[in-house]
Length: 497
Image (tube, rainbow, N blue to C red; front, side):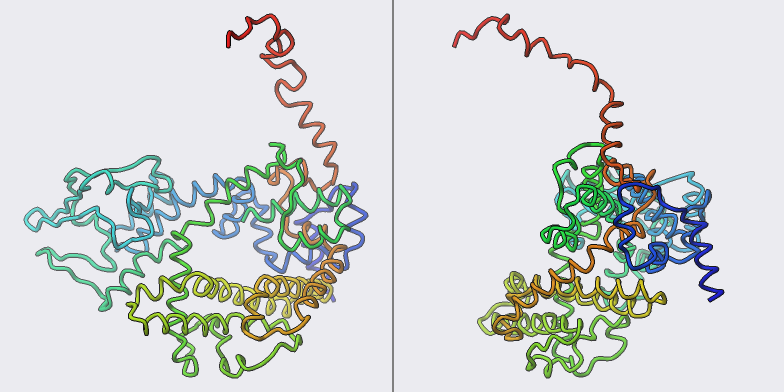
């Protein structure tokens, strides 16, 4: 009890009471403490760092900066952190002074992989580096404009090399390089593993901001009680026309977030990589070792053959493993069928993407997220928060099942009116979570000065903030420059057409 009291006191110190306003009536309906709910995805240390003047922890600083200005966060991340990570991950000790200069912001850089005519096909890059043993130098060269380095974050333009000389020490050769005689050496026997390790540095959220504006504004409009809006909460955002107001900041957030969806490459190829790995695992599904799935993402393959024979009983959230298992089986059979018709491995996998491999990769990821969400909710200490989190888990799982209803019926897992029951359950969960919506957003949303949205301020006074924004906008109280063209249009010479 004393420990809980101490936690509450610290939370109140870091998170002061929200301003009074129209949202109070909705906050009073919540069955949990919004400050406690923050501990579902933060801890006291990171909360303290997020409000500190000089935060030192990398992740907490990044999250705080992203909430304040996501464009600035991306600029810092690409120019300094990703540049530094590339050197640290692929370089050796003689490269460390460069990292030190990056950390002091003396220099910045970028990771220039993509070229004008090559993006996700990393093995097809045409920039060459030719080693000259007698000079101990590399000669960088771009054959033509299509080989120019382009589409690179923080580069700002394009780069072409015209027999540009670099000292041998400039090469990042931790994963492989040439000796003084020009012979290539690498600790990796498998070229594919070396290639994967080299690209690993590429894989190093404005969503709370968008959600904060949406839920708080919808509650002010008093439409959150409508079942259509309750259903839309699970999909995060359904926008009112007021979001097109620049002061709502939704457009800026959308623009900032779009880039986050493609950092690791073209999404179709990434999904294909995931499905290729799953297809390789499927034949030995009954002989899997812990090393095959260190994070437990293949747990859905336990007793896979038995699971595929079962029908839905609607007992647990974990029934979402069925779509993942069925899609893996169906995709494997599709690839095998295409190969039996004479297709090579590449063509068979390529022609099995639609309705099979792409869906398989999506379901695989969704299943992993759902299972981890469920585990985190079960282990949360606060009973009231845990109850709400478990409802959110159920809603997320039900939403995913509804999303894949066709697959569930094709696989014979659902029969009759079970799909209708699923949809009824979704609406019931939405109704149960409606009283919790504003407080859930309070636990997730950044401070108002980071939110920068007239619709999502924590005091709920959206219309007052809209009025202030409109009245103070430059030129809002004056006529436009072209007003005479509209009022005195008859004074202009008529058209001769």
